[in-house]
Figure 1 (spheres, protein in one colour):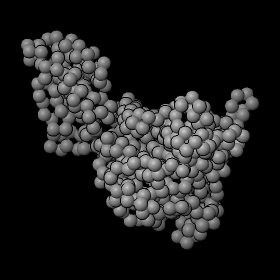
Figure 2 (cartoon, protein in one colour):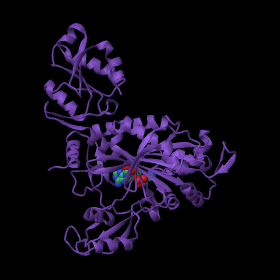
Figure 3 (spheres, protein in one colour):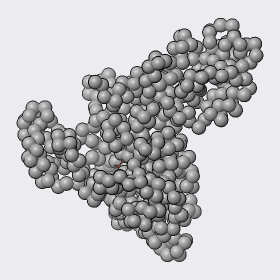
Figure 4 (cartoon, helix red, strand yellow):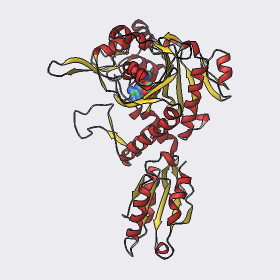
Length: 483
Ligand code: GAP
């Protein structure tokens, strides 16, 4: 039976959400996807809601940094030495795979990300793991650095595509602090492409070599890390394989969460995902143990959502302490400490990060909203209206009697304010189905009655209800429905 991941890939291809990049070329590479019109629109809507619910709500600053950065930046960040995966190669057929991934697949047990090479070798031996292609033995586990090197200019100066978007936030921090007149704590946000030379990209958008992140780095004085007022909000915590649903206040009190500041941002992250239409029971915060945390993190919470692939990490929440500013200060020989107006003292800010993988969020939304409505012989995406690639589609019932003219006028009027789509091809039933298939929540049809009384039908995707609305009331009505 087709699994859900393949199903979503199939639907995504057919409906113009995304497809493998350069798919018609024999030297195309795995782990690269192009977004089509509906995928691009959905991605932009996710980012728009992220900006509204996190960046703007918290008065953060947003920048747009470069994707290529000089070698020194990644020496400072530690990515050239520590951003590695364990690689094994088949002695006979030279097939290459991530050691932790293969061991996990074979043993069905979680494998920590930070084992030594020797420990991976022992696990491979103990579990008698052989090459899945030719059944031969693997070589000893080696280190694979995930950074993509580049050569800049005629001298081909060593540089790299960024492996996480936040490094230009750290290199820009002194200028932003000087020019923005912000005081600690404050956040700097950024969205954009990220590049990782993954050993084995897989599961369509879930592990790719070029993907999109929306990152927030909150700079703060560790002395005032607890000065945040907390709500009573309860979250689902997953700690050492146990689930606990407790309030963030209690979690800080019990030292489950390091500080009020972190608790505050975990709550915002939950609220943002609720705005995307993900329900509480489908989300959890998993605390990573030391052996699983990234090399720069003091405390990590993975925000995960339940999909057919299991609990899927969408956002990495890392307490990066002063790791980054210390590293950049040392390599660039700059002083990066600042005066905290609250305490009047100089401090090297600490950083808490919310690093969201936009492609994984998009995948999760496709999967969670995909429905097969057998009764009405249709498939649909039940996206929240403000998330849908097309918010409202406008059709003339038939291509005559002046209906297309009126429908186009309505399209031009509504297109100022909403994402609209005009369609006059095929039967009306087919046009409705096509919109259901991409998750359009509302369709407007101009028919014979429109020409008499200036009303149209407004059709609702989810319950298929149709109501008549005056053309002059459409904009207001749709605004109320944009939730
Ligand atoms: N700055 C911190 C950072 O980059 P990360 O856990 O490596 O942390 C953050 O990445 C998020 O980016 C992940 O939670 C995931 O959603 C997404 N992500 C990471 N690697 C990915 C890949 N190869 N393909 C698609 N998304 C990925």
